[in-house]
Amino acid sequence: EMLRSLVGSEMCIRDSRIAFFDAKSYDRGSFNPINEREYHYDIRYFKGHLNTDSVPLTSGMDVACIFVNDTAGEEVIRALKENGVRLLALRCAGFNNVDLEAAERYGLPVVRVPRYSPYAVAEHAVALMLALNRKIHRAYWRTRDGNFSLHGLMGFDMHGKTAGIIGTGQIAKILIRILKGFGMNILAYDPYPDKRFAEENGITYTTLDDLYARSDIISLHCPLTPETEYLINADSIGKMKDGVMIINTGRGKLIHTDMLIDGLKSKKVGSAGLDVYEEEGEYFYEDKSDKIIDDDTLARLLSFNNVILTSHQGFFTKEALHNIAEVTLHNIREFVEGKTLENQVVLGQ
Image (tube, rainbow, N blue to C red; front, side, top):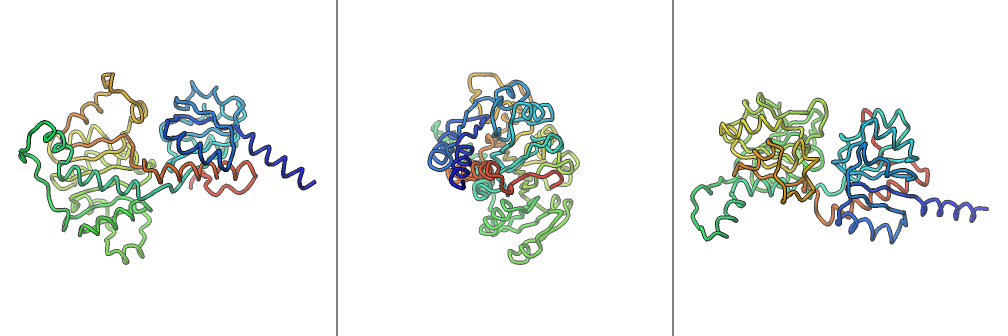
């Protein structure tokens, strides 16, 4: 009897069907080997985003697996449930693209990957800082064109400068340790300060206004919530040092982009390194090189030689992709086997 139930359970696991949206070649490359070795799920890869138009593709599926630019609002969630989907699996840490209230109302559990590689994102933030400071992107194009002039490429010593870190989760703590290695002074803001970490690492928690006023570089590492939406705006930029560098590897809507552009034009903002953009969904992860960018705000950002915009690639390391696949498939197994969902996203979390 026990053997029969085990075989039945294994059949159930193996037969689980996953609708995998916004699938890229590198997703297949990280998910397929792990799935074939250990899980044996039936993964159907779809190139398009999950939205109201594509949700019919989930008919008869058990799990919908989505990424940062997929949309799971109330209408999509209702349709997922009607189509028989029993689990929404996010293969990312952020969940601001999911209507959690609707998910709870319709009884659709949501799981995520809370940690994949905090080193990847922290190191990318540092890469943006160094590239902007030392004008690496400009030097690269210049020397390729045979121009070896140093005019306009002057940077500053990171040593002795002050970095303001907004949000002190796992990524930010790794970044802080790296920047301390440069000999930087660290100011931090978090509504829930980690006082022990501050003492052990010689950093100072302070108010946002003080952080804005004293920081040479400001890096954003807070989640996107109603409280943090457009945290960087005309008012906050006005409180910053002249020539401040702003780095965002968090979520696009932490910054009001038009107000950032005004700050860049007035020279109040000296440079900006952005791995995210508030309207990135239509562009990021796609090849648009044969088209004109019809988003005027994005086009304007790209026109500044003191802005580096990367396509939400902070997470994009071999280690992180492997961890994302491992944890996502593990999350699905926990659900299929009726276990407690370790990485469930709960409303009001």
